[in-house]
Length: 361
Image 1 (cartoon, rainbow, N blue to C red):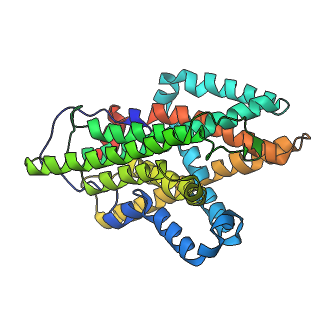
Image 2: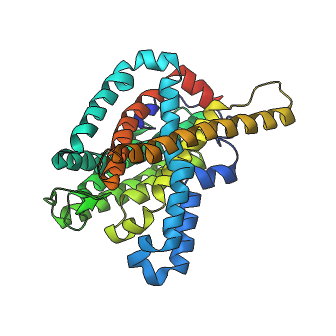
Image 3: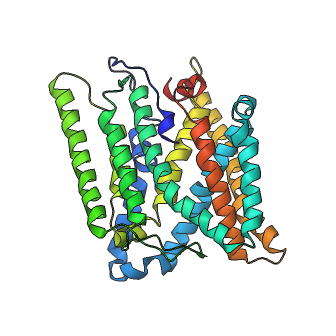
């Protein structure tokens, strides 16, 4: 979900129902980042002596694989289901549904033989993913506000948006700094991009810290003036994203074992399921519970199987034509995710009444 997700009217309502998607414990763990932070803390405690080789440790590899299959792959599949499984979306977003996939599939085929194009796709991914993650945090924060009956005006969104944009600026700038420069990503070599001085990145990190401080000052001033503050899960989600944007390279390499699956994808899946299975008024609560569990389970299996086909079976099929399996896996990953970024921006918008009603009623 992206920053385009949020377009609420300029009004502040009286306190509404609980902002949580399910309940405080579920949301704090799966949406606000509690699960990712818990995993980070546990692994840092048990493997503190091996921090430099954390990603090569078998427990880390296992966690990464589990997270990929449970959350990351299904979360990409969920957007495909929403885009192609709903006729209005197919008709409204024709380019994203048909034109963009054709372009990306063509680029995929060429990149199998032209390394420069594979490098370009890898570079695009590592730059766009920062905005994708942070904008989703912003969008979910605004969704929590809407669920709580708090409609922020454009002026009141100023500091939350500042956290979003400054955070993304910091993260992208770091990719163009020598201390952050990667030689490769998923086995695909990257072109040298370290043309920004270290002091500039350090200054941007300080600016992000000041922006976060200003955000909290603004919230306190709202409370002092007798206005409602943003609900707790909204603040936690937004701040979780901001912390990730400003991490140092050494810490980020460790933390990002967990973030794609146990922060970004898990919060996405929680929102998708909340949208699909909102409570129906007037139904027996016990019947409703079992109905939603069954529907959620069936839907998750569909997401899981599609993710398995895309990210596991498809690379094997393409590599059978004589190409490197690692290259095929990387290119499938880039192709699906670059499409996901665009599709996600289209189908999840609170200004869309079907989405707004499904997430805030």
